Length: 151
Image (cartoon, rainbow, N blue to C red; front, side, top):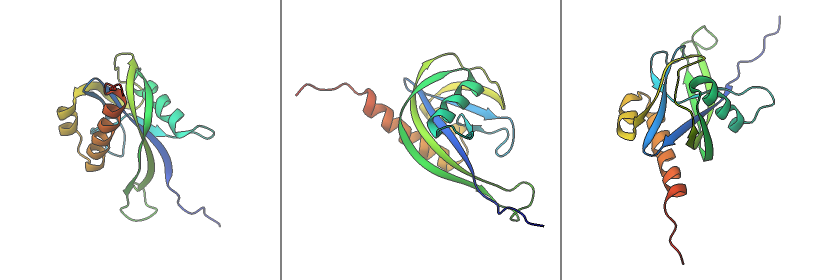
């Protein structure tokens, strides 16, 4: 009997800003069930990471956004005993974006979705990598939306 080696699962996430507010979702399933996080999920075959991030955003929150740039690629690894139920390894491609429409309504695999002021969004997220990604997304958004001075 041959078994396939375990492999990470590709996922995409998106940090959406509306002015100085950040869109968060409360996860409805593992890993991190019940925790505030970023919209996102698995990348489907034939789909780019950016397409997946925007699709997951629409499915989970009913909102839309314009991607401004790549923040980072993050590993989320939860190994108890390799290969046993409950383990996970996701490779998450996270994007910075600005909101373009829709009011958040929890759907798909999330139980809540809402915009929060930046400081409150940071306080609600438990994973340090999520807080870091939100901070770096803010820098990208501010760089794109800052008034340009004439030269």
